[in-house]
Image (cartoon, rainbow, N blue to C red; front, side):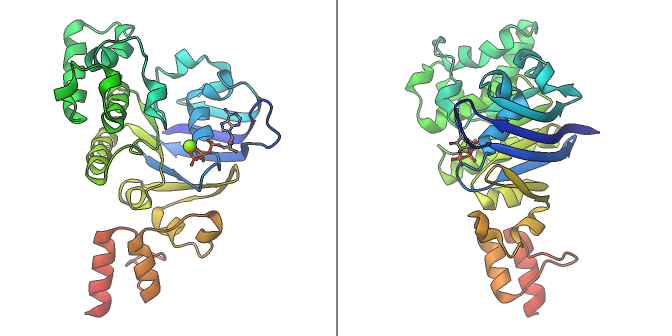
Length: 281
Ligand SMILES: Nc1ncnc2c1ncn2[C@@H]1O[C@H](COP(=O)(O)OP(=O)(O)OP(=O)(O)O)[C@@H](O)[C@H]1O
Ligand SMILES: [Mg+2]
């Protein structure tokens, strides 16, 4: 089933000359884990915001084409309606904090309070996401006493607690160290394996390769390609888009070792190891 359909989307911020998104079309099936990549300022965050309705409802500006989320046309529905289906984690976790809650626990509870859930279910969900995001030990702290990494975990926990059908994440681990990032990606993957559709803008190509089943490459507001990580990272012209393939892909390309049964180069450590062992056997 198609969870997201984007058809001829064009968008320009108010007071801006250039289009931030130019004639973008793609479709995402239920349960996919999609990566959005591209260098700085190509429109990754803008596209994420178009999937949750902040573009155009919050930012205004000039808008053309269609975005359908679970059958709802974003342009014709309020952000409140759309947010029942889609949860978004922002690039800067500070943007996400309400600023009105005394503790991390209350901050996470905030989104659930208007959902009409029974208290006990709310408590269970909050305990679960605190555990998943490994922030149980700071649940009674003020959100503003957290480190950047803890704040990012709290922002993700708040959205996960709502159990949206679709999760949009804009560079969700920018404040985290490598071990912390890995933990958070694993938690997002668990979520995706429960059938949730995940769309994630990210600069860490090794992570994109490891977790995403398809990758959408953006450049200057245009969609360049939307395909498997192997296809995208094996493109000869990748450098023209300011993107560096995972190190495993670059090594295998230098050695001319392709992934078995596939026209591209390996993109993960496991696949590179397999391909290299076979080729040197
Ligand atoms: N609120 C805004 N008002 C006007 N222009 C904006 C606004 N937000 C972003 N832009 C412009 O839109 C274009 C796309 O920006 P966007 O933030 O979507 O890029 P990005 O790919 O997410 O970049 P990054 O990798 O740095 O996060 C840029 O030219 C940017 O300057
Ligand atoms: Mg961005």
